Length: 120
Image 1 (cartoon, rainbow, N blue to C red):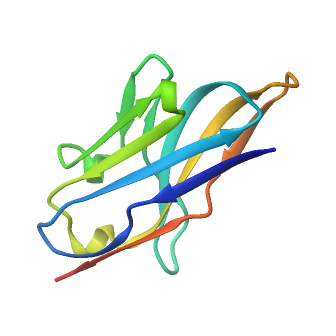
Image 2: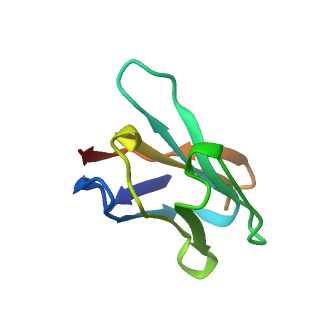
């Protein structure tokens, strides 16, 4: 069994900051890429940021310069530092991770989501 548990969401005023965390646990041998997605009401889920095991990153144009993704491989955890938040960043944020399990399979796992609400 593998679990991804997100934390750090909440309500913040426009211009504020939040830091999301996503910790993976269970039968993990190693983790390849990790990423954050978000889904706003009535919209499709979209990629926010991704990071490889080696630390290479990519970002959606809408968050470049404001959000920073990072990871701690020793803790099997990925972070999303969100600064200069805007009301349009309001969404449920999900992490995912490509995990090599201890029984040798490579599977994509998703967290349960954490709500981020930015008030104007």
